[in-house]
Length: 259
Image (cartoon, rainbow, N blue to C red; front, side, top):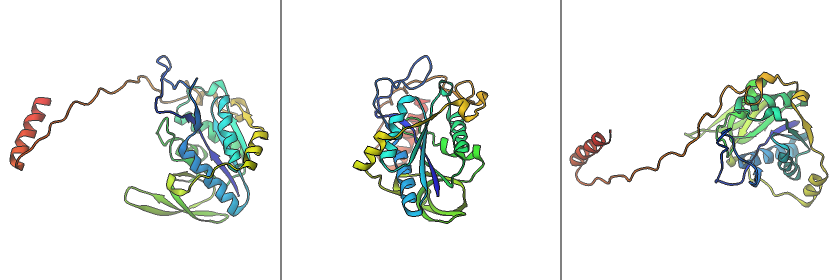
């Protein structure tokens, strides 16, 4: 069974800085790591390979320095890594990003399952995984907390919901986005580190993928960030005490004065 895992390199900090001219993240001088949710995707891909056979191919779209994230994924048990890097990809929103990733999946060809983390820590949109499945026209199951059974044709999984979980069976090929409850990511072994050190990362650009240039980059993105600002600090609240009827009258008066 051939599995594709999509990962993203993100800043390892909560102090994210924004370029005021482009409204994009400033990554220079900031330590970057594999998106934490993607670590669970990598682990699940490797676990499925160990159980069912096949191979795990990890892909990422980003600048050249994202090669470090892919090598880390190889040290954790992935077999092959592909970096999608091209200046033409710069400024892509989630729709354009998922389009590029789907083009890479098409170029890879033979796969049964795509696994993504549920969302990225820098964007928090949870849109790229579902976007990939949409571009490919394959089923998706989001917020997967457990893979129960996989055959040559179907997969049965538990999907987390706000009320509990659902058990869903889907035909293959399909895409999962996974939550942290699904497993516990391993640490790289010495053998894995040596393999990653020697690994050659495949690099594909827009032409290699056969991308429609009108669907990538800032100009090909249907959404864009037009303004970024820090919300004003909240005002101090008012504590109301007394019997219920008095509190209701005081609350109504406070709301009236506020608006």
